[in-house]
Length: 187
Image (cartoon, rainbow, N blue to C red):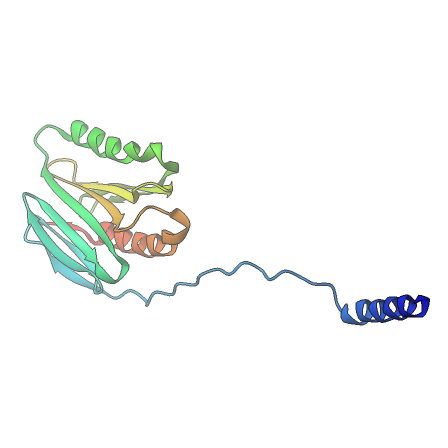
């Protein structure tokens, strides 16, 4: 009996020492890699008093009453544009555009100014807001000539907001929105 115990202990100790090799290292967490094709832009007539360049992957859908949607079906996202004429109400329009942005502060981690745009030659002025966190809209912006025209815009995805998941798509579409703002011309 004593021999059996010694034999079992010997076999167990041999198995334990030979079975252990290098120290076990946990695998790093996987990160989803989303690659989007390089953007290609084309001039777009909107049917309204402005035009701009849009990504060829996007589809423009006029909605009437100064509203226009730029849809990205493969990304399940839409940039909503609303045009309003300026009639001695620029301060009110600016205040409303800022209020629309800061309504997202409830769910947002941060709202930062992603850029201020000035094109004195074409009279295009605007501001881009980047919203981080699980807010409904990741990007808000406005564009104006400060005398006659005013446009507000916002980016929405057709999904429950999860900032980490939509961040690559939001960054890609932010470039398109910047291009829209930089190439916008009043008619």
